[in-house]
Amino acid sequence: MIPLLSVVVPFYNVEPYLTECLKSLAVQTLDDLEVIMVDDGSCDGSRRIAEDFVAGDARFALVEQRNLGPGPARNKGVEHARGMYLAFADADDVVPPEAYERLIAKLAETGSDLACGAVGRLVDGVLEESVLHEKVFRRPELCTHITDKQVLVRDRTVWNKVYRRDFWERAGLEFPAGIYEDVPVAMQAHVLATSVDMLGDVVYHWRRRESSITQCRNELSNLQERLAAIRAVRAFFDERAPELLDGFDALVLEKDIIFLFQALEASEEPEQLLGLAQSWVAELGRQALATAPSLRRLELHLLARGLVAELRAIREFRRSREDVSRVVPRGWRHTRWYGDYPFFRDRRLKIPDDVYDARDELKLVARVEECQWTGTEYQVRGQVAIHRVDRRVGRLNLWLSDGHRKIPLDVRRKGRHGIVTAIDPARLEGGGPSWRLQARTETRGLVLKGWFRDGAANSAWRFSVPGWSRTGMDITQ
Image (cartoon, rainbow, N blue to C red):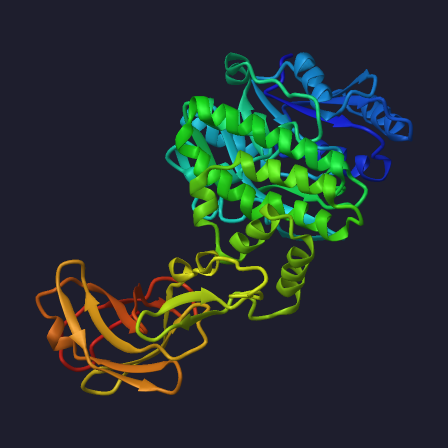
């Protein structure tokens, strides 16, 4: 009988973890599945564990090959898979019990080509958020696409997904050899899919272990493999979805390049690494390089000039300073806002001021902490500050808006960042039932606007007026 889902599990010398992985597949609430285990030439006890599962559960099958790496092993597993849907799991990871049932249920509902979900990171037995996937699945959405939901460029793994088997074959997807073989395939699948379903549920537990091949990230060969994967993705995007290049490049500058920096910090002979690092940067588009955060631009500037000692100093600065991202104004007649980092206007290095320019990184932070009825009006207390700027904001204006009207409010300052304002409900008559509070500040030539958020719930703060009796009015926020 043909199973609904085929799960491909390549393995190579993962004896301490394989049992937990396979057990998590055996207890899936979706039991109409087959597990295709591919022994990639293991020389420990992994094969014996796989054979035990084959003997005890007819849904498990074992395939073997000589050691060719995870990409060819996955391809071999796909060749043997019979299911209508296709999934992948790494042998040292764990799949939550309801993961596949939830993913396939969405695909059955929508007809999308693939469904993906959030990832937890297993660190010493404790489940944390995967920083690789952060920001991706906070707003679940069905029948979307990476060109519309460009945050999906951050979803670069194949194992937090279920694919329709006919889509996989129609798209001609195949894993290359190498360590980071899943990155190009994951990106190709997102682009080639007609539509994609995004779930907010955690559907995969990704284990962190120091001995895995992707944990040796600072080794030269590993970095070269990573660059090869980046080049493959960029070449594909350039041909099929050029609008995604800037977002992908920004992600490389945010996440991947850190491993180059770490390698340069640790290396006693950084010359080889410098050449590789400069090749990385040469791959990236001008837009991503120009809009990178100021501290990252400083690191890239030092890297481009081969100033390894200074780059190491900046990396140490990042680790040692709690206020590493502080931004300060410089100049009185023509004020500009710069990152407060080492080597600013250093006479020897002569780094351009524009490298430190952080104006575009500043944003207004406004929070409501309390809203109380006084008998005649509502008194609102809150905080207004500029993120990363350690000083009191300058001129400050507040107003309520329902999307059509704006009601200006008087504001009193309390201490460094505190504010107090009052809302007379009578002033809102004739307007919408829901109002938002907005602030505008002007500080040393810097003008910023922002909506207030609820300080307790960390969500948008709204002032709602369900009834218009002048006393005992029921108003919520």
